[in-house]
Image (cartoon, rainbow, N blue to C red; front, side):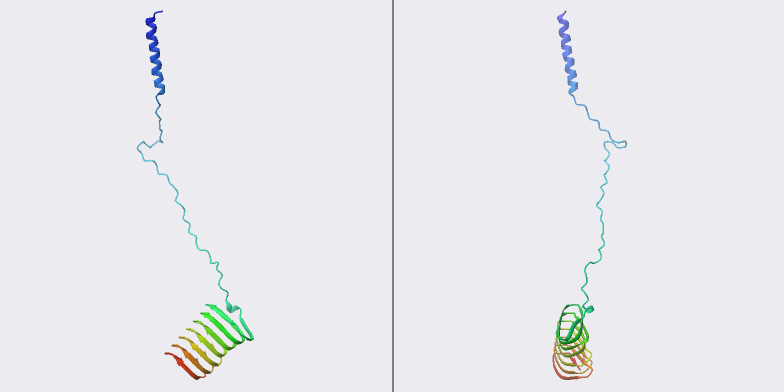
Length: 201
C-alpha cells in the first residue's frame, strides 16, 4: 500500500467526522406556530375575566317582636290594691278599686276609666291618665294630661304645660310651674299657685 495515499485519506475522514459532529451539536431553532390571522406583531387577544356578581339582597321582614300591648292585659287593683305602672311609650289598662296607683316613666298612657283611685301619683313627662274617679292627685312632670270622670279631692302638681280635667269640682289645687291648666266642671275650692301662665278654674 502507498502510505502517501493513506495519510491524506485518514486526515479527510477525521475532518469529515469533526464537521459532522459540529453540525450535530448546533441547536435546532424552535418554530412557533400561531393561529391563522395572527402575525408576530399582532396584539394577543384580551382574555375576558368575568367580573364578580353583585347581588342585592332585599331586607327581610323584621323579626323583632314588638312589645306586647299592655292594654290587652289589664292591671287589676282588686279591692284596695296599690299597683305601680312604669316604662316608656306604653299603654296600660287598670281596673278595680285602687287605694293608690303609681305611674312613673315617659309617654305612658293609662286607661283607668274602669277604676276608682284613692291616690294617683304620677312622675315623668307626657303621662296620659283617664280615670273614673280620683280622690287625690300628685303630679310631678311636664306635658301630662289627667282626666277624671268625677270630682277630684285634692290636686298637687309640679311641672309645666300639664292639663287636669275633672267632671266635677276640685276641692283644693296647688300648682308649682308654668302654663298649666286645671279645668273642673264644678269649680275649684282652695287655690295655691306659683308660676306664670297657669289657668285655674
